[in-house]
Length: 356
Image (tube, rainbow, N blue to C red; front, side, top):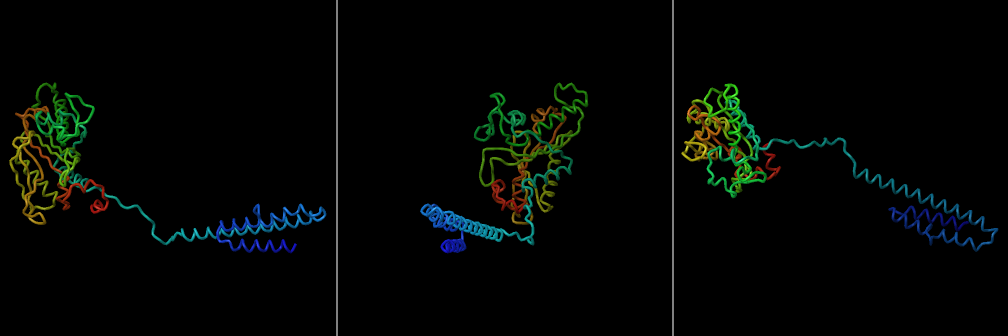
């Protein structure tokens, strides 16, 4: 019996020394395993006389129960110690401020587009919208662009599947098609109000067409100042007596409001666009700042070509107007002093967060 008591004490001592569940399992095997010390004593019962076997078996079972109890107690102690370690490592300091999601903001080009719409909206211009996948007629033909124009080349324009050889589809190369769509619908409403049967060009009375068309456009181009996808904002004003003077007044007012300064000059340089005649590039010059004294091109413009007026359904003998096209991306670069257009579209949050 003293031998069994010593065995139980030895088991308890080794269990107490086990620092991990693996060490505890190794200690268990030394006492309760197939070759363990207690197991050997149980095997030896067969060699005892029958009258001694019962008492010895009872004593061995009591020793086994004591060892197993000590094993379970130590296993519970190790589990509790591991739990406390995890709780200490993962402790939550409730005095710390809560974590909040970072505050987002509009993209700098979106800020510019909103600013453009607000300024022209104050001058009575509507905002038109239209599809980014356009037909050849709205994108080129209606805008007096001949079939041999370079813009119709596959190397300059993204053509897409779904069209026909007679009516190909493409990603719009400018937002001018929205002007044509808006004007056509405007003329249809005027015809309906006047009871016009729709035959021939319209020369009756109607409200002036005053609209801007902002949106994404696509061309095969990519460098520090260009992108295959970029933004444009086209403007159109058609009426009975809308002149080049009106264009200059409107665009000068826009530039001064956009850049928040009256200390700038505008210059109209003769140019060529198939959809306007005469045509002009518009340059601006700041009086102060890092760009002071330099002439910077910001837009193309001109009197709407008579053929384009006809394609709107209007009689060019009675209706005339001007159009212009500005690049919001370029205006954003000038307003915020950004030298590489590609930074706007690379998705670098470190760059975009500056405009939040």
